[in-house]
Length: 427
Image 1: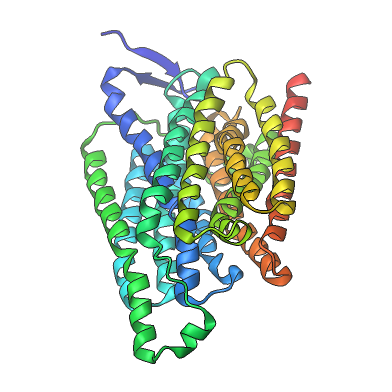
Image 2 (image 1 turned 45 degrees about the vertical axis):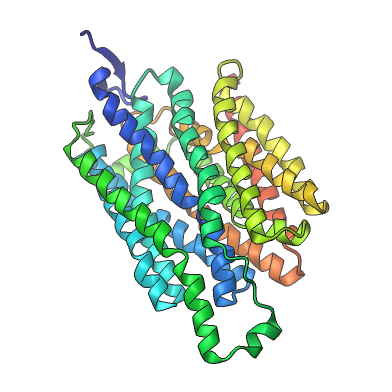
């Protein structure tokens, strides 16, 4: 059988791909599903823990902060390990963190301590940092550079599939729909309140324990599966960073990804709060609509991959950014189910943004592709910073809808990034 030979994405290094790499490709694509699955349980955890520990919107947003601060802390170590030991090593380390952190939800639930939940989420996110730093550029090298964006969008479509399954089918298992009023809470004895908290905390054990065990099994499969890999020879880490930062595309990509991830997390994490307050839905009903949010996110990925056959990715990104700016205005000013449907529409038009920004940001980095990948993944810290700002605005104004000015501004910045990309193309 004759093998097809393609250059690594803008790196100048040859990578062979053939049918014997089908299993590795399937395994790597599965990672997009699993990290999407656990990320899309966070919007379920936020209202669940808010209720269980009587948290404000700002305090509950620390779920996002504990997750996305890990991206900032671990992106550079992840990039270093992959440059020295290759993509497969980075994936194995990431899977171990992911699996262990998921299993730690059991003792966290037993402890009834909010900080322990945040710690377990931080460990999971450390693993996701390794996985995303490895898997995103890994997908781009398995084929010709001109179709790298489409391949990445296709792989991330499975992330969208998880965005539907997690809230729609696992969300109702976690959310109890038992919300105590202040009067009911005050009327409870200490023993009754403890029993209530134990019952609320226990609902997260089985989903996360099951997920953790599955991830650990996949770790073993990855370990014994041969995978194509490229180990780059770089003189020093410092010089590579200097070279990488000469790229205007990378600088803008880092900024745009910071605001995109912040916007995505803001819209998704506070979806249930928006649905229960603006449309007066129950938590379980809101979780089902959150599943539709994920479903339309997935449909948007597949649709965007198709549209990119006819429209340049940067032009599609610009169009989608402007549409989401308008939709954010509707979410802020609207009421009732209109707000819920608007948020679902935002998901559709957000769907192509992460992989498109990522691909545009690392374009032309050659042997510094892994450095650029680490820096763009590092910018995911926007998901730790912007949701608390939204939560603080909500707490201060008494309206969660007012907080959606944060994603609106974020989409403005993404539109500017896309516009700059088009200017560079014309020059």
